Structure formats: C-alpha cells, structure tokens
Length: 380
Image (tube, rainbow, N blue to C red):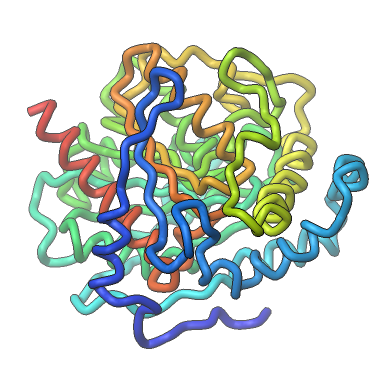
C-alpha cells in the first residue's frame, strides 16, 4: 500500500479560509433554505476548486467526462476480490496536511458486539475537554466495503482542538465479508456504549452524543438515529454527502437529472465527469448490501423523516449524492425537524479526509462545531 501524502503546512492561509467563509449566501430550493460557499480562487461562484482539479478526482473527471453517457449508463462495477482490494487500498491513500498545534490524545480501544466481536474504536480527546461535554461519534465512509479511521485522524484532532469536545470513531465490520446488517449493528452497539460505560470513561454527557458520518457512513449515521428514535441516544446528527437512496426511489423531491448541476462556463465536461464517477460507485452500492428491497436502515430516504433529531447536512454541488442530500433535507424540513444544509460549490465527493488540503474541509468542521453548540444551547 502506498503511504498517505502528508504536508507540514496547510495548502491555504487563514486569510483564504476567512475569504471562503465570506462567500456564504442563503439560497432557496423551493421552500428549503440552504447555504452555499465557494473557493475564492475558483474563477466564479460555480467554478471547480483548483485543488480538486489537480488531484486524483480531477484527473479521473477528465477521463470520465470524455466517455459518452450511453456507455457510462451501462457500466456497473463488479465486486471482484481484485477490485475490492484496490478500492480498499485507495480509501487509505487520501492526502492531508498538518493542522493541529495542541497536544491531542489518541487512544484505541474495543467495544464488545452482541456476538462477542471486539469492535475497534478510536478516541480523540485533550486536557481541554471539560467534563460533561458533548461527544461527536464518527462513522466513516467507503461504500460499505472499505474505509478506515486513519485518513480522518488529522481532522478529528483539529476538531478536538477547536471545540474542546471528544470524538469517538468506529471501525465497523465491512461488507461483503460480514453480511447485512452487521455493520449497522456494530455502529449502534458503540452508540449504546457511549450512553453508558463510554460516557463514564470519557466524562461526556450521555444525552449529548452527536452522530456524524460521511458518504456510506452518513447512511449508517442516519440508521443509528432511525433505530433509536424516541430515545435520548442521539442528540443530533450530521450527514456529510450521505448515501441515503440506494434504491433510487423517486418522488416530488428526488428525480435526478443532469440539469440539477450548474457548472461554470467551459467546465461542463469536467463537472459532469466528477458527478458521474460517483454515480458509477453509487449504482453498484445496492449490490454490496445483498438485499432485494429497501428498508428503513439501508435506504433511509424511504423511512419516515418525522421524529429525527436536529440534522446538519453538507454536500459538494458537483457530487452525485447532492440529490440524496437535498431531497432528504427537504423531507426533514417538511417534517418539522430543525435542519441546516450547507453546499460547497465546485466540490465533488469526499473531501473531509483531506484536511488541510481543501479549505472546505476545515470550514465544514467549523460548521459542524457551531451546529453542535447551537443544538446544545437550544435544549438547555
């Protein structure tokens, strides 16, 4: 496996990050308000972030954008051992830059599953974390078949430094070696632990656990919230470019079409290349689960949105999962769930684990921390 690339300094200055924050604008999708932001050096509000163009996703987008749609529509990624091994290795090769100055303690532990399996977890904390603080519980992405904790280390250490609250991440068992719903059971088991022994070990408020997941992890995070509706297990949820509608159920809010995306002039092929490379992976995701029809865990979009905790959602405007994210935000909003949606123009899928490279990743941490603080204040 090739090592992750790591740089000693961020790829952007604090001034640049503040300029990105200053681009924030409120837009409307029907009756749903949402926030947009973009990189100041993208050339236009809808321009692709130049850091993205220079990376592996940008290079893939150039190739994918040249393939006619009628060919891409017929492509399905088979889950062969070779492809699976390559995908898993790729999940651990994302680049990041050093961001953290404070001393952050990182400890590995396990939580026993119902079948006795020791579920690996990683805990991030510091001496600045006050007793009784909220806790962020993270579930990584990776299309249900891949992903590890290591690519996110710098981001969660930075979150602890910024917001002085601990983070716990779970390394759940993966498909296809462990059949559905093992991965959901693992994630829910650790959530239960955080409400008991884990709360005592970490000195957190057991009623202030916020579950966050990116991509497939967003699906699993929503699964935790769904399973424990009506309890105090989940104070709030944060769904980052989540996979929510694997079965493609259409309704008034979910009816994907190419005109949902608004690329900058001269960048249409590149932009749609970014969208379609994620579409290929999403189309194959249903086969990974190995179940014939949707249920409330694997396909949250068809579950009842009422009763969900306050929800933060975020997605790149050029991410195929933009439609999942916006449509679910609509449903939550209509059901009276406090909802905040932040969309990053010019970004595709999966940037949280490139902390210090993309300024949007650090801004996303700031948005998440502010959301948690606001929810805690409103429920005091």
